[in-house]
Length: 153
Image (cartoon, rainbow, N blue to C red; front, side):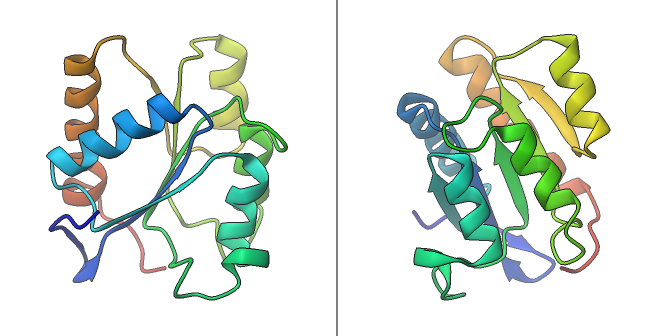
């Protein structure tokens, strides 16, 4: 999927960590419709997310796993839970500066608290309905790829 966007002069890379294929498709379509990212890499479980960011296994080649400018992370994931993925990334000196946005259906206060306790950059609850979801993705893209200033990775 090729979309015109840049992040401090570079193509924008988003890592989407989502096990629900319908939700993943909705995120990717919404980001594409709003031209938020040049590359969207989708993985369907927490272990694959960690393999991607740490460049292990199938993702050892940096060409297959370019460093993401933002990670969209679901919480309820197979193999490794989203909160554990978040904690592992945020405790890595090489990766902790990558912004992570939790994108989940959970509104539970304990999940919000645990995410922020592990240094999540933002916590968003997936709205019901395509139009609301698409609007959220557009605003997310404008904020993280347009307005927000990040340190170089």
